[in-house]
Length: 77
Image (cartoon, rainbow, N blue to C red; front, top):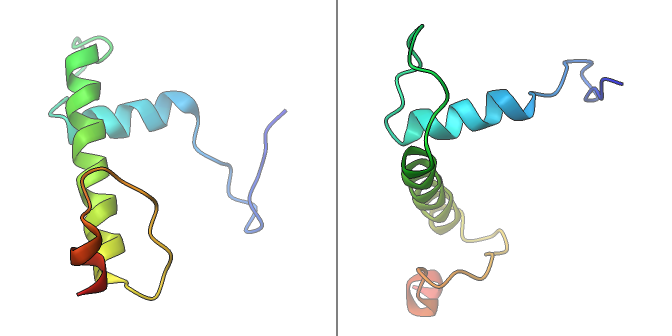
C-alpha cells in the first residue's frame, strides 16, 4: 500500500530518507558505494538536528521542541 499526500505525490520511502540523511553526513551515493554506514548516518543526523535548530531559532513564533543543545536564553532573545 502506497500512502500519498494531499497533493497526490507519493511519500518518500525509508530508503530515500536514509540516503538523504547519509548525504548530509558525507555519503556520496556512487554506483558501487553500497549502503551508508552508522558513522555517516550519525553525522547526517547531527547535521539535520543543527539545521532544524537553526530553522526553529529563525522562526520564533513557532513552538520549539525541547532540545539539550538549544539554550532557553537563545530562544527568548
